[in-house]
Image (cartoon, rainbow, N blue to C red; front, side, top):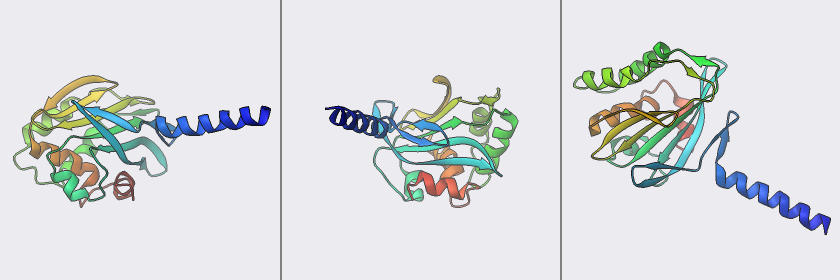
Length: 184
């Protein structure tokens, strides 16, 4: 009887661990995420590291799994990136510098105003356990949430392509994270 109870308890724990999310860098990233009225599924996840420092756990959420970065970037479909910070504190200037490096790898000639607006959302240090979500919904735009609070939304498919190219672009500064987010 005790063995049966113990087996049921273990199976329940294993099953609920799988249902509740993927653990990366000690942080649990949920299996699903809402984007407007759409339910997105985790496509892949990995760590953003700077040298040996774990900065944040990061997951890509899509309508359906896909490993083709270019088609993901180009698609006018709901998409989200969740960043769960691990490091004790990341200065907003460092985040903006990283975003700008990523934007610089894209065709952004006509997106300077949108990039400035996006960067203006990052005014406080990202501290351990902060969660940032960057969510795109067609006909709405790219929304930035910090700890579930909407900072703002930037309309346009072209801006969406530039933002997600930070992680998924051909020339990304984050090739290992890109591969993990693509589920490879």
